[in-house]
Amino acid sequence: MKFLLEVDMGETAFDGNAAGELGRILRYWGGNLHHFPLTPGDGSVIYDCQYKEAGHWRITEAE
Image (cartoon, rainbow, N blue to C red):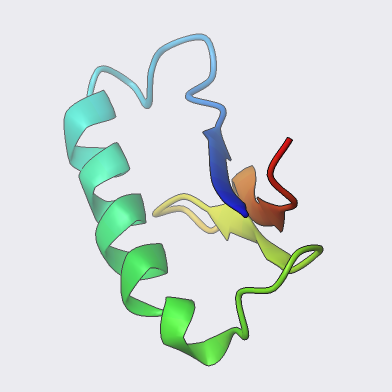
């Protein structure tokens, strides 16, 4: 299986705070993974600190 995380940082890379926002996203979503079975096809939308959709994560079959 593969864990795929895709985050769209927009035109301004989170208004110049890419490292801080990506760190928050990784901490928040990484800490919530235990709520999911983590089987192929599983996933969720990812939101930034302003609760705007910023990407998604998903579990896929290995190639």
